[in-house]
Image 1: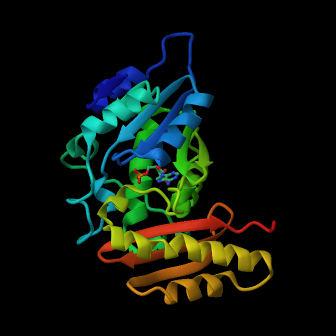
Image 2 (image 1 turned 180 degrees about the horizontal axis):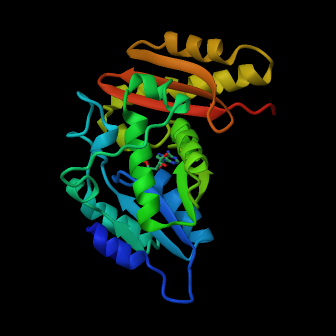
Length: 269
Ligand code: AMP
């Protein structure tokens, strides 16, 4: 596996040899890799000739007062993890490679990025859309792999690819959960064992919402009831929305950790 840190070297590495254009699969991440990320790499490995993983804690998608400084980082572990997942190239740039002095152009999603996570975290999806656009232009992937765990992000990225006619297929992969039901997330590292017990109300609430939906009752109400009954947890939002399909999405705060999760609202029992 090659590790590349400079944009110029990445451009050279991604130029196909004359006469041969291998299919490239890109997995954008902020590192601290876990089984959720690995599922995206496995999907890319199965479908593409060349697998590129980016590892970049993107300052532009963090708001003021958010956890940019504390965000868990483990580059040495991530390099070993990516290598053992069969990744061909890891792109791990410093911030000034991505946002050099004078950088001043942004990709700003419209309505799809303005509610739920977008209203809780103003500017978040502008940062996401901008880094994804840059990565798509630099890596030139045929496919890029994202987790349904961040369903609104999938919707934002699909919208940007459609609107800007970027030649990349966005592949949405299912949410990977720990055995206790909590969706895997780098931010789970912030949770104490007690916090974690409290946080389990989030997947429980979404399951209750899904069951209500399947029985023809109010999914949001059912999920909210479970969350409201859980001490030690603050609800940021619970909502039904079209996030790359009908979705029940929620965000909660446990201690100082903000967690998001969602389920697809299918009709089947
Ligand atoms: P992050 O490093 O948190 O920015 O995530 C990088 C990619 O991994 C995003 O497309 C996420 O949606 C995806 N991802 C994160 N957690 C999970 C999970 N538990 N299951 C599936 N995909 C995930």
